[in-house]
Amino acid sequence: MSDMKDAPATDAALPPDLVFLKRLVTVLTATMILGLIIVIGLLVTRLNGLRQPPLPGLPAHLSLPGGAQARAVTLGQGWVAVVTDQDEILILDAATGALRQRVAFTPGG
Image 1 (cartoon, rainbow, N blue to C red):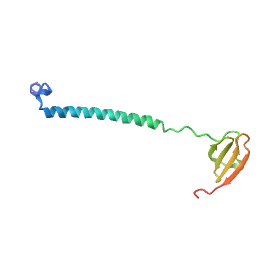
Image 2: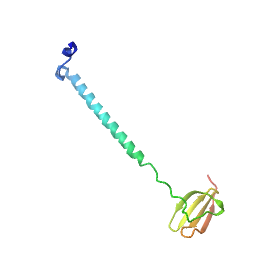
Image 3: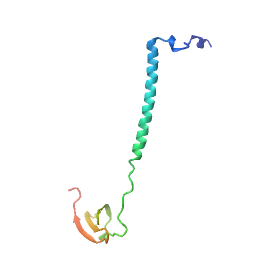
Image 4: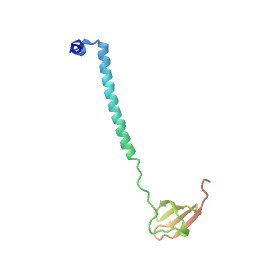
């Protein structure tokens, strides 16, 4: 109990510089907490937006000649371009699936 008698009752008993410093530390602490909450909130909302929707696959009615496997598919108006694992690009008709064009390429060059 003797400790309670020695402690100052209000901020008025403290020197003005110490009162200012106490308030400054309190305001800066509150600002840091608010800033941390904002940064965490922004990270959560932005990182959730980075999830990519599933990529479209090869349409079911199309089949690739020669047992090729599709690596990438590009859908256009009336056509479908398929990059195969045999290092070629196949341009197929979107409606019929008929092969319109075949383009061979060398990867990395």
